[in-house]
Length: 433
Image 1: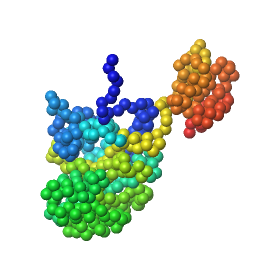
Image 2: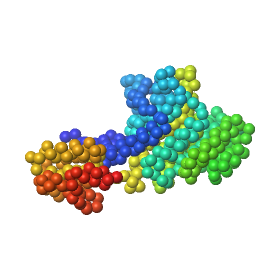
Image 3: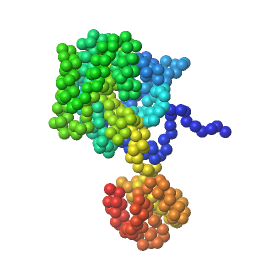
Image 4: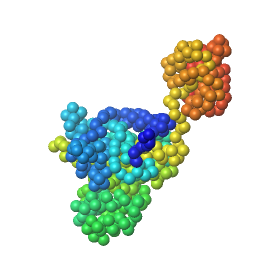
């Protein structure tokens, strides 16, 4: 016998988890579409040259490659988007707004909420460098988490050009990649080890300490930006980053976003090399240690490797599986392994056609309905309904058929009522609301 098991870092999804997973994807689609983003899809495999060297040294190491083929499995959906846009932009036109919900693969160490195969729910705007698209990206993230039912979350925002402005003034701009990668580890390894990592990259102690002082800035967005001015004064890059962030915070205030959910955090760096402007990381206030559950940023140069046309972009990605792990930990997942709302119990197999007719009437009215497949004791059928997570059960025995009246049981409260057949649909529609 072959022992049934899953590969380490991969997982099966049982119906109750998959129901929650699909719900998150449906909400994401609805929010993305409400902003005008259109769906696309790309292959799971890309030529290795398309993916290699586009994320970071770490993602290059984690990439699943085929030893006998020049192919690799995509590690995110952004690099394939750059290839896709360069290949099809003549047909698509700009600005082009897309969303893409699909699995990606990274050979990283599995840990809480992190797997080697995971689903990403991306949205991006391609072909414009307007700051309004950066601001809209933040608004989409905000509205997405509201639509998912979260009240306590924080979107941390930064701008790559603030740090670049500082590095420019320090004369170490060519070391920006090393600084960004070290700074991205700050929450995990602390100040001393970040400084040590920068020193290993031949960045002098004074500059390394200055970068850490910069990353430690605290206060309201206005207060932080005033402090940043002292670090980047005279740097065109830094001043542009400040201007973009000032416009972002002013705009979301006018637009009516809850400002308490958006914070300026100049310590976030996002480890991927391709970001050039605004960056975002989203944390659940009740479970911050699980990490960012929706991240992204502006990337103005990613597509230049595939086309001479300038195709700047900005977007973000919902970390679906990490968010699911967080929701499980917070007890926010509903225990249901069926998409059906109503179970029709069966007592008389000779009335199979009538059971099916009743179920079709309910489905036609928009009520997802399942018929129990064979006559069994009512207790067994109720146990099945409760285990699967149905909301209501219809007791449909000979007496009910004869009287044209149904016993409808609320499986949550365990209360039941007699409902006339003519009123059944209206009753269930009102109850299920």
